Length: 165
Image (cartoon, rainbow, N blue to C red; front, side, top):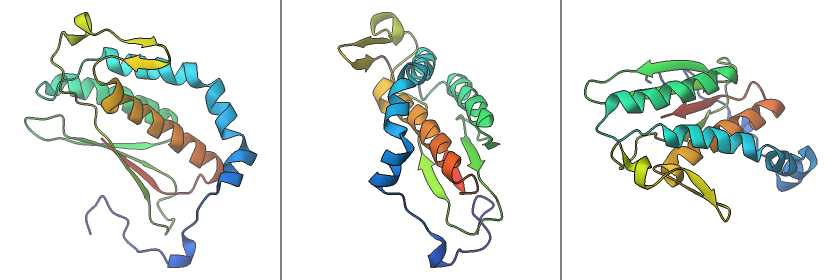
């Protein structure tokens, strides 16, 4: 096992699931609708941080922003540096002694768009759609992952969760 894995496998009976009924009773959908503007502000911030794959410093800046937000949620941040790229940002949540398999969320913050794309393709929301370099792939997904982590931790703070970017 690597240092990025838990050291002991969990017994099968420890895995849990959530149902649509549970989500409905918790009021998550309504709450997320009320918090949409805050989430879109975070998406906007990330999209405005241009981060083309070839620009490791720009990608790293976006990762640092996400690391800050993840830290606010109680995540333990580890940076796996690699030469020539931004490396990997690892954020762990939950109780390290919990034997359940961790929920693994994967994403990225680099984009195919070169620096300067914002000038011709600015961040905006139009007719319910978000536009800008990286808005679809995958900066919105990273913000959504953080929101999902926040909600899961409200009902199961010990649940092991790993976010890799």
